[in-house]
Image (cartoon, rainbow, N blue to C red; front, side, top):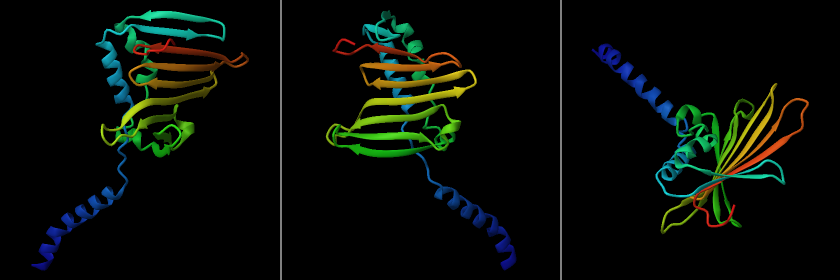
Length: 194
């Protein structure tokens, strides 16, 4: 009888032991930077903001365009193509670092790849203003993307100012050619010019 009971309970005991081991693996609950940007894009899509795009192709040349709301998602595509760190499979490829910057009075949450040479996105950073009374508020998002292959070098430094604007500084260099830097800034709710 003891053998029969042991044979019946053994699979359950093994199952519980395996489950406990899986739960000991650190669960990564990263903030979805992609979701924050999606919310911003959805808000602008339904707003009446005047959307302006500035393109600086060198220090002397500036082009200005007015963007229709329907085109905003396309203009913001660099931000909408980042990996979603709330997805467990993707989160397992990144680590989180948190620090407080007293000068800025901001908590800085950084997501960095465990294997930088295998990832295009080298950094996703959130600058958060802590506030116990009203709740913490994300002010700024920084994203760094790098592609380096036979076709050349591409680096995009992306800055999203919540509820105001975004900027993408693109550095490209093809083999045997000089480096080209282009800055694109899009504003929709910014009080200051540019």
